[in-house]
Amino acid sequence: MHSLEVPKVPQVRTELNSGSVGGSFDIHIMGVYLGVMRRGSTTMHRRLNITLPEETVRLIDRVAKKGDRSRFIAEAVERYVAEIGRANLKRQLKEGAIRRADRDLQLATEWFGVEEEAWHGSRR
Image 1: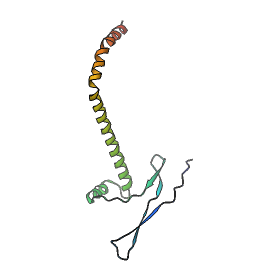
Image 2 (image 1 turned 45 degrees about the horizontal axis):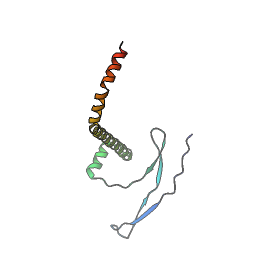
Image 3 (image 1 turned 180 degrees about the horizontal axis):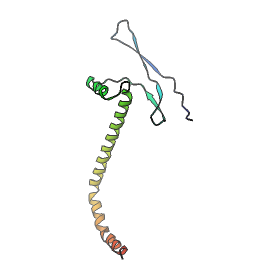
Image 4 (image 1 turned 120 degrees about the vertical axis):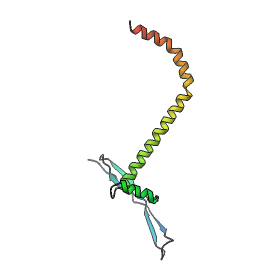
């Protein structure tokens, strides 16, 4: 059985909503929420207040199931970060290979005779 940690008491931040009549307040809860992921592990969720272009919201609504925007955005961010990570790794590997090309060619040339001898010796 899994034990769940009890979340800490959320922090509450109030702001005066200057655009409203009567000086009302907006209340933002910066708490952490527990949720269960598909694989059964427990993950922590935070509520965010973000602003997106209207066209982006229409795209999300066109693709995501109703009431599933958060999951869709989370998966999109994870895929994007993974893609950027792969691109950076590929770039670093290429730069390193170019930087070490002369050294690698020299090593291959120096060891070619030894490898040829070992290869022919093992075939006897």
